Structure formats: C-alpha cells, structure tokens
Length: 186
Image (cartoon, rainbow, N blue to C red; front, side, top):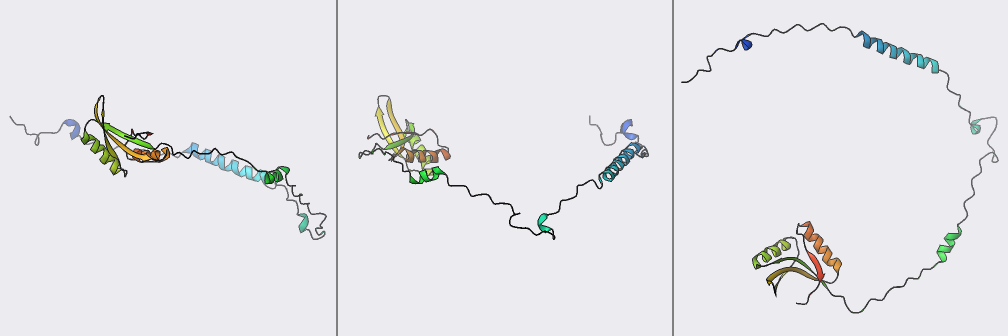
C-alpha cells in the first residue's frame, strides 16, 4: 500500500509561525565611557607635567663666533699601530712538505655490481633501468657451485671516486643497492 507523502499535513511544531522578538534597546556603555575619559585625562595630565623638563642642548664650540677653533683645540688623531712582528716572520718563513712518491704501477680498477639474478630476463630489465638513468651496464654470466647467475655490472672505473659518482646518479634514479669492488678479471 502506497502512502501519499505530498498531501499529508505538517506537524504542529512546524505549522506555528515563530514571531520574532523585538530587539532590546541597547544601553549606553557607561563603564566603557568612564574608562576612556579617565585614560584621556591621565594622558593630558602626563603631557602637562613633562612640559619644559627637557635639558637644554649644549652649544657646539666650533660654531661660536667669539672663539674660532684652533689647531691645538682639535682632538689628536691616534697613532697608526706599529706593524706586528709576526707579520714579518710569516713573510720570511717557508714551509717544506714531504710528498710520498706514488708507485708507477697503476692500482686495480673498480667495478660496480647493481644486481644479480638467476634468469637473464630479469637481468635485462635491470640493465634497461640503468640505461634510463643514463649509464651503460653489462650482464656477466657466472657458473658457480650454487648454480648459474647473471650479474649486472658497471665499469671498470680507474678510481673509486668515479664509481661513487655513478652510484649517486643511480640513487637519484631510485636504483639502490649497488656495491663497488675491485675489478675481477673474469
């Protein structure tokens, strides 16, 4: 059975019109007026009492017409400081530094390994991510006692600083976990 909600009567609470009460006449804020009058009169009293209590400025001696400024009256300039003894010592001093000779034999180069996988496909994916970072990597196949591995390596680098520079570039591309080792000649 369907109900007719449109023609039903409204409840008694909603039917009665609310009458607006007449706003109360605002009274003059007597307390606030007294505070304002007291503050203004106190400020006026303060200004009246400090009037004329400032000291007189002293006249400048160089501006007086009856006595001109003499060179003896002028303040003496301070003597320039003498040159310090250590300045002369430092100018004449020489420093000798011993430099260790570097060996003529080049140090071992470095390599960076970023991943190691059992499948070549995952190694190719990792190589592609490194290529998107702007670096070139290689996949090296290794057969060991625990199976076949595909390593993603970068290098060789002549110094560890060069390898670190590329590792930071990879970290900015959110490729983490790369490790730097001495180059293996395999």
